[in-house]
Amino acid sequence: MYKKIVDLHVHTDNSYDGNHSAAHLCETAELRNLRAICFTDHCEVDWCKNDPNHEKSAFQAFFEVAKAKSAFRGTILVLNGIELGQASYYPEISERIISSFKYDQILGSIHNLRNGIDPYDVESFTFESATDMFNEYLDELIGLVKWGNFDVLAHLTYPCRYFYSKSGILLSLNDFKAKIDEILSMLAQKDKALEINTSGLRQEINQLLPTVDIVKRFRELGGKYVTVGSDAHYSSELALNIEDGYDAAIKAGFDNITLFQDRIPITMKIE
Image (cartoon, rainbow, N blue to C red; front, side, top):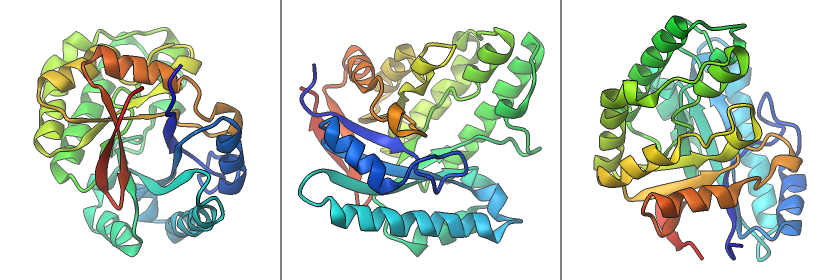
């Protein structure tokens, strides 16, 4: 049992797939004795290109979290973050969003490929189509890390949960070692954090995203910072399996978890 539990990837109802308010989630966090919570509502940058209302929802999210931060000051550390999806596709939009508000933490992620396809929306996969999609996904992650204006790379193995849940396909990540190493090496060189995302443990794949082996490889390649997040979209998911994430960090050779305030990394000893 760990003394200092933090959840650094949480969605409110300002995410298109979120369900509860920041205030309600803070109340839940208090009941579960969390030390800190970071709200990271979705902002899919490629959607912003054609839908100004999507960008406006990110601004609304910031203001609501700011209110929760003030209301719960002294009881729980509330951090104001954002999950920027596909930021490298339209960097000028991404930079505008980032510069609009003073975020604590920016998650970088890829959900949709440039053709607009998200593995979440695909009905089924073959081994070949899953392999092709994962290679394309990793190429986009490489582009995202090269762009680099984020703090934490979220759920590195994101598509794998859908390959498995929709078609029972479990790819061997060793087959993609060169690209994964390139991503991890760049993250380490740029002093970015790698997220240990626990959402896979409550899905059919029953794995951390990424796996412990990848987190360990990040350490071997010089990675300094890891974060842990539940990727909660309901209050019932808040902080689920965070301790498994801490266990993975320790197995990979880390004795600290990192959180970001004003986009500055602050390490917290795992104990």
